[in-house]
Length: 198
Image (tube, rainbow, N blue to C red; front, side):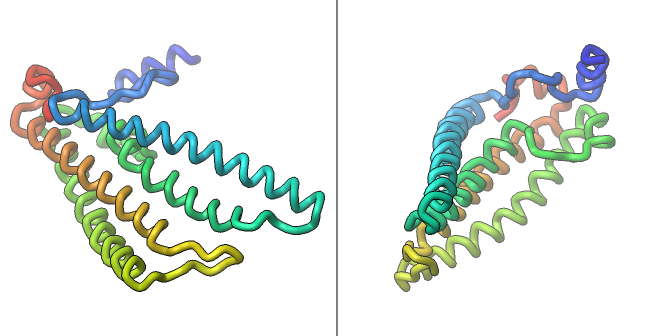
């Protein structure tokens, strides 16, 4: 049954089940993938820290009947960090959830054109998000706004993480747009012969 699943994934152009993460390669893509992988390692540490903090907080509440000061506030910040510093890596490696019944079967220039459309829609969405998050961060930074809670943390911190993560996503989408444009112009053969594009 597992062999049949892997064969089906291969026919659809998907990574085989259990396959290593595939990253785009090229003079721009390879260094960018290293940056994103480094951020993924930081995300893993943040996720571990979040799990340890929550475990300690739950245990402390059970024993002493009250929470540890600051765990809730730091957990909120770590959740933002984990989410927004990971989305660019997920997009770049093609590991996001997607329904590809149609897209998975399209090859050559048509597949490249769909990639261009995908990147443009993503750029429109994340471009607006980058603009608004940067504007909100700027206001929070200059207004010295503080979050609500037992421990008041500047709201500029989580808003800054949103802006940085969104900027990483915009750069990622620009690289993917360039690769999709090459594929649209050259087809699959040119895409592979030119060192995987951008």
